[in-house]
Length: 227
Image (cartoon, rainbow, N blue to C red; front, side, top):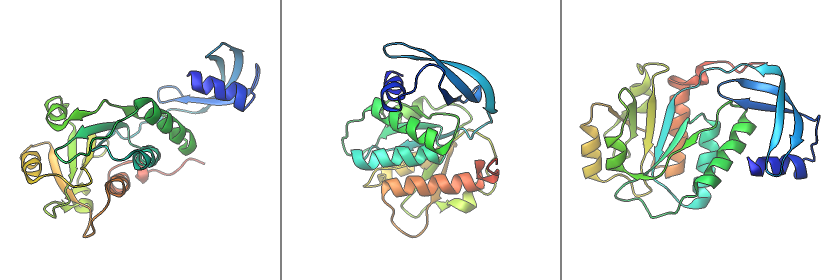
């Protein structure tokens, strides 16, 4: 909030009475007027509803952390494509990379504003694969992007996917999942193993490809953009 207040006041040079659009996933988008600025805060008064809140796909993205420049791009584009939460997962072949949750959230906020979505994805703390699966919520399907060629083509696998159901996409590290990980994941009833075509994709490319196909077949790309 402090960074946003600074930008509004000192970069955009907005003052009391200025109008701005404010949004969240619960209340929708509102025309707001600025009140007083504090040192790190800005008071907003909603005056007119511009766009009501609408349900968005409850779609998590599980991924193995990658290098910072490519991770920044991944978070930005996956936010635009509608990921509801980012869940970094340490797999056996994950390269050690430091994550900055504050930076990732700032990127997600900017991408949400640019794409005009009304929610900002959650950023989970990184955790080992076993820990993530141990805490897995009941009823959420896990779509595993399997680069080994053993998965069902993603469009075919999602054809009968229940719409609006909680789901997650899981894309592995740059070196791929190990055979042990694939075997263990494939035995879980919550997992659907899918393939992303005949080509070998980089991790960040696979993320965007899987998100786009999911949204087109089982997500919110079946809706029209409001005029």
